[in-house]
Image (cartoon, rainbow, N blue to C red; front, side):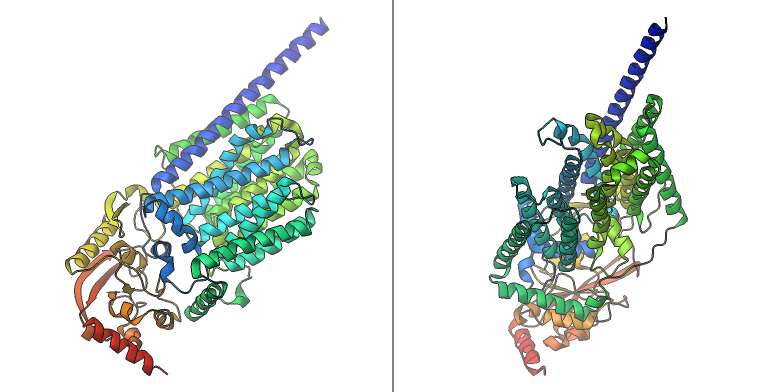
Length: 623
């Protein structure tokens, strides 16, 4: 009788265990569906909206990088082949940027999970296939990079990609130079080269971090380091030859770019690259942070339980969360989330929940007392600071856009204790993945509702507008679409030809020049509002030939206190009131001061030869 009772209990327990596995598998599938729905949502949003300041700068720089002699970041040259490959289509360019970031994040996630869960014997046991789904879900967290909604490729996206590429290589390295390890060191070199092309200061700090990590986990190898250095040098030499024809020309380009940035005086100097900024969260952000921390912690604890009922409860919560993510990404649900700085810091809530759970459970503490686990976690935690290095913005705010690495740190801490569970290990990630999807969706929804320097949510920007020399279409809000249409109409009616130079004296409208199909001379953005803006404009235009300056149109904004005066052009023999004719006025609104603005378009009317002669005389007379 007793044996029968034990047999019945064992059968019931087995049934509950199988039921828990079914629920966990269902939750995993729901998370995968939610991840793809978020990705598709982002790809669809790429056709909506544009920022006429930063994105205009990115587009000008990517479209014609060969026109500019000075640059610290070389992202324009890196992305120009992609720009041409997609036929100058801005939407496809943005979508390619989203997919590149997602794919790099997927490869990093897969490499991380494989490193933690690989068979000790090194033989394939099917683990790789089982890790594809969780890696895809984790990768969706990298889409929080678009927290500001600037989807056009730029130096920040290139920096982010370079950090992910380098991280993949670092995880593959080892002291013994096996084939995979050599490949890892080569990938590290490639990532370092990309970081240098994006932001040289970040590349320097990244190199120091990689060196510290490989020493800490006993992966350092002189030959491996040499392989990385040679790879990076080879890539940079090839880029230098392709861009400027010689190493000397490339160095001169970067030196001139540094001199121009110094003239602009944008709050930057070598002395203040490294600093710690304050972190102030609003009440709403603190509440969201606390709620996500509690949700992640409860789900982690429930999933770790030996009781099937608790594991079923955790899987159910994860499935419900995934359903909510799908609802938001498809537009069926519209949560109330205000946009505020530091949004991607939500990933720290998941990291903190994982750390607390690890500290409270002794089996986990023992599993985490591994030098490699602790070093890998620290490596990922520091990477957002590397990403932020060099910006003149708050480092917490800027670095949080690479908060995906904080999520990766949580993945490392959550996966390490489950490394011995084989196929079951991926289910242990369910709470982290579900919480990450909730955070990602909230961040991206706030971004889509409050796009950077735009006056309407992306979902409400549905007016088709021709944009750029290729007449590609973007969906803009009605005010922005009317602004572009009026600007293009005035220019066309007065003989503007595609590719003509346009000097932006408003200092905030590089996107308007791109929309016209023109090109900004000297630099991709003559940025106003900084202490050295006027000197910056003069220094930038000093590198432009007189023939190009003489044929340039002008875009002005007389009502803005930060716009350039006509006097800044006098060193080039230009008297705007004498040499130009006002051909049109455009009025519109925007999301930054002055909100209501009026711009004027001027065309050159002086004989071209006379204008060139005047420019050359003015330059010759300059002491």
